[in-house]
Image (cartoon, rainbow, N blue to C red; front, top):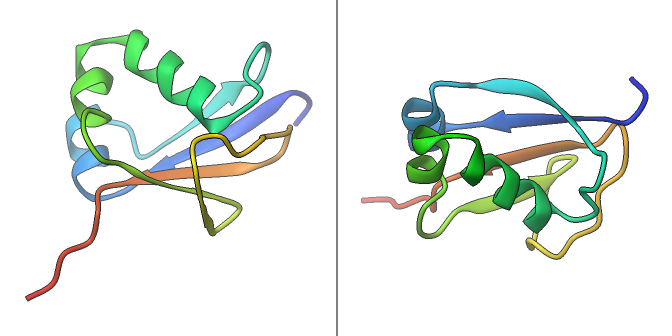
Length: 84
């Protein structure tokens, strides 16, 4: 799993992007924000899926986009949770 990051998506982010899980090469990606920018540039579906407020988690812990990432990490993106 050298230089690979696992990306998981949930709820609306999964529905709009059309991808629930993918492997992502770290290369020049040092933070979650770098990954977000690359995914948004990937295609229109990803740009729409990640538009607006998206919550992120690294290794199942909530985090911020400036959180550093490393090979083997799991990063998840999902919309804000609302209840009622």
